Structure formats: C-alpha cells, structure tokens
Image 1 (cartoon, rainbow, N blue to C red):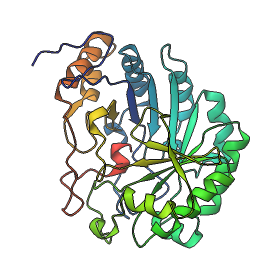
Image 2 (image 1 turned 60 degrees about the vertical axis):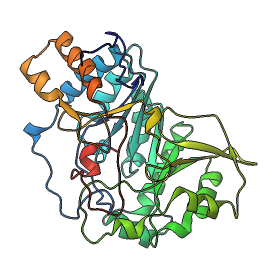
Image 3 (image 1 turned 180 degrees about the horizontal axis):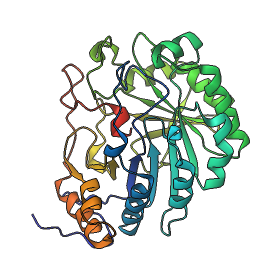
Length: 335
C-alpha cells in the first residue's frame, strides 16, 4: 500500500499519528533484572550498534517528521559513554517539546545535575521494591541505597514530576504496592505500576506464575488510598489517577488486562538501528542499513521512516501463559 502520510507527519494505516519515539542507546546495563534479561547476557559488538552520531541523525529526521517527544532508554542509557553530548544535541532540536529518560537510577547520584543541564525534562526511575534484599534478588546486581541516593540527587538537581516505574510480580513484590505509593507521596513523586511484558526467554522465572494484574493492584491500593481518575497524561500508555489529598499521581500500564493499542502513538528505535513499530510484534525496518547505505541523505532516511508507518500493526498479542514469540529481551528493545 503506498504511503499517504504527509512528509512532515507520521500517520499509520489505522489513522494514528506517531509523535513519540523511544530510542535505546545501549543494550548494556549494570543490573540484570529478572524480567528484563538473562543473568549471563551476551551483548552486541560495537559494530552492530548505532553510533551516537547516527542516533543524532535519526533523532533529527524523526523530529522533522513531527515527533514531539523522545524518550532515551537502554539497557541503562547512562552507562553509554558520551551520552550527555548526545542528549544536549537532541534537546536542542527545533520542534521537540520534551526529551525524557528512563533509568535504573544507578548513575543519578553523579549524573542528575549534568542531565538537567543537557536539557532533559523528566526522569522515569525504575524501582520495584523498597526492601534491599528483594531489590538485590530482582535486579541480581543492584544496590537499593545507590538508587535512593540517585532519586534524592534528581530532586536536588531540580527535576519535577519524577516518576517511579514499578514492575509488579506476584510473590516477589506485589505486597509492597501500598508502600511504594506511600513512598511516592512522601517524596513528591509519581508512580506507575507495570504488568510484566513477555519478551525474551528468561530462566528461573515463570511469567504466568508471577503475573499480577492492574485490577489486583487497584484493589490492594483501595484499602489505603482514594484514587481519583484524572485526565492528565504524559503522552505514553499510562492511565493516571490522582491520590486524593496529595500531589501524587498513580499510573497503570496494562498490556495484558487493559490493552492500550488503539491509541498507540509510539515507535521504538532499537540499539541496533531497527525501527520497531510495535513492542509486541516483530514488524520493523532496518534504519541502520538505510543510514549506512545512504550516508548524509536525509530525504532517503525520512522517506524510509514515513513508509515504515504502513507496516505498524494494529495491536500486540501478548499471552502470559505461553513461551514468548518475541525472543528479544527488553534491554535490546528499549523499554
């Protein structure tokens, strides 16, 4: 089907406008979270991943095509050498409204202030538990106290509406949802609870057994908090509620129990240069190949991006009870 998209806007065949790009700048991470990757990972060689200059060029192309929000992800994006310079360049792009980052918080104690200076507007920080031993078990290598220092550094640097992301797993941390919301309230944060997404085969972790639905989390929270539906959103898949009597918001990302595909405005650029049109499908275009076969040719790159919208699927088809069809891990997908 020929593209009908305007050269300055990305519209898929279902009429959805794509104005949000998530860019993975590395598949490497200093944690090994059980729901994200295997304990012993083999990471991509440098030649197979996008250079910072290539990422910069791709960001320019997407913003020229109407993307208003870019989220930088990983792996852990802050372990990528030179990332601050890349962030400065992307933040300065004319037409971009918001540059944000998802991080595990491990590097924030030293990098929060430089990130603010580079032009990053908001931070999402992964925090699945407030118990140091559970944190070590879930992340395999992480230090909860290091992440806490990072959260305080981010607040001191002047970031507002910092959001905690918590993946809730039955039997691992599901009994902490009220404590996590109270932590957010006490520290002036927002929080989103995320149903685990079945990407990559992970040993010693049964996803069906660990699944804990948004509805179950809401029922738990209702015992301690009054959640009021609100119209605010951040351009992503979270459905937000205000916590009565506080400034905190609680969001829910529910790929299983409350499919959000109908309003999807997102695409993802993987660390190896694949434009992934859907988190739960393999529809993709190799933009690294376009870049390297046509160096410096922005019109060709932009046309490849426009045409890619025509293979964006209508929805994902996750099944928590089956082995994942999608074999790539979350650290390669970029969240």
